[in-house]
Image (cartoon, rainbow, N blue to C red; front, side, top):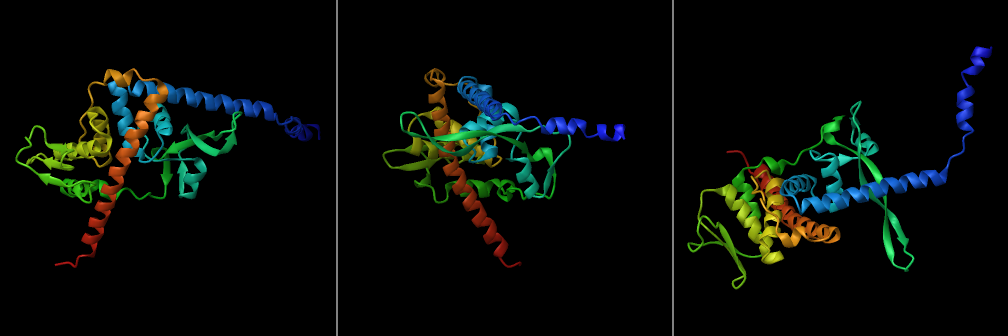
Length: 285
């Protein structure tokens, strides 16, 4: 029976090894610090290198309301990602991670703690996730509004806008659209180039909220365009005053861009959904 008993010897040895909580906590802290360092590096590069900014805009547009920090992490690890969840969350959705796929990491809030100075802060843990392209199984419903006609998207962009949007003979086609602070109105040129019109209207909507920083407004408009499958207008140059900011300030700028873009995206999606429902409810002729 010696050979039979030996089958269980390694298992017994393993079970006798105590769980090293201190080592486990240190490993968690090291992983968090690695992610924090990646976030800082990506934020710095995003507002220093135009090609990095273009990649970030595409990632943020696909991920919607995902935080700036996690968007930067995903852009660094899996830039083609569009819909990410943990292994267990995908299982609950009826999908399985494909064999051989490697996950990547984001940060997940894990409650609050009190700093030494008495202020409250949020604690984060590293969370392993997978993109939908790394899974298979039950189909996931896609955004139906993405495939709607450009005319519908443009109309949705201008419907229920925070300021009036009016056609004007005084705005040249090369400019496309212009926000007048005096009139609190966006004036639009008459044009057949609806792709460009979508971008410039989105840009001027951003200008109405964010002020006269054209670069910031262009970034916001590009996220909106990418979100709805409209050609964006890449920013070929990043202003020196932005590239010179420290990492914390750059993350703040990206946060402003994200919030403003989402405000527009949410309204456009809502208007497109309303149009789609109305079309469905119309009787057949």
